[in-house]
Length: 330
Ligand code: EPU
Image 1: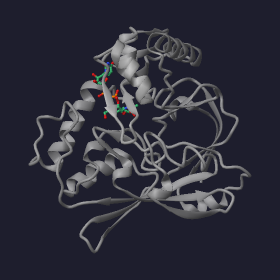
Image 2 (image 1 turned 180 degrees about the vertical axis):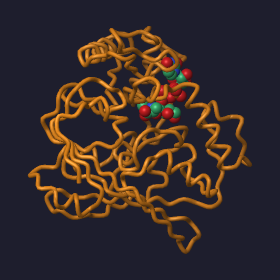
Image 3 (image 1 turned 90 degrees about the horizontal axis):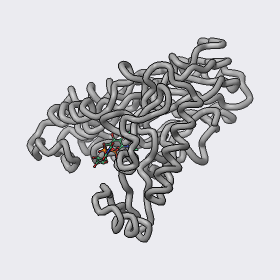
């Protein structure tokens, strides 16, 4: 176990705002976790691709770095993976695709760790983690023991799960169980993936997803960002009908429950924010929904820009945008 003090948060969040973490604990095993003598669960950080530190953190921060994986075959031929939370998500996707297994290919190139994936139920190009999640192992801070939640227990929703609600602050994900298939068909519904066919190989799907992502989304290693900054708002049928009447071109995705998800990036572009910003914080030129830090951005610039975007979009479309990233210190 490593205990670091007074470390720069910029190295631990891909948005790279300046802030100081008073105490950073890094554990490599469950036994190290169990020995950590802190009364409350620290703030749990993965690879920092969805957390932005707006100010110095007095609260301890914890990273769980165990990164082993185990593979089993189920009786029905599916592949059961048990992966420690510290494993890098994209490396896992690449490895499963290299084995010829189906399930994770549309989720290629998403930054972050395996343990972070269930928290916001990561999703892209018509697939989300919930589609192949079997279970999640959660270390309960007070009990000092691991409990297994099956998929239904995780209450996955759009960028949502029990780990953001009831279990928030009560412990951390230490491993994830995934169920993959040795045979599959490409999920090609997303525009940009139309060159794929039902015969495309799992590797061709992954390459196509990587190409689409690279054409729209900035690489955090080149330009600091945390992916989509806001969630796509989900509107009631009435609110959507009103919006659609005024703006017939609004990209919309009907949900199973009758509500309609609309593209926040489109609303932001229509409101004039694409490529615009305050100081060094801006909406990315190729995807307005992604806020970027061009180098010397500050928390004040970010919170000002967020507020301006929220109020202007609300004024123009009567829709309130909620952050998708975790803002610490707001
Ligand atoms: N659009 C614009 N202008 C923009 C951005 C988008 O008009 O500046 C339009 C696009 O043309 C498209 C629609 O809005 O018609 C949706 O855009 P896009 O396909 O780029 O996806 P998104 O809804 O903005 C979501 C996820 C992404 C995920 C993509 C692909 C959320 C918050 N974001 O973005 O996930 O990669 O779909 O499935 O749900 C993330 O969560 O960090 C993330 C990157």
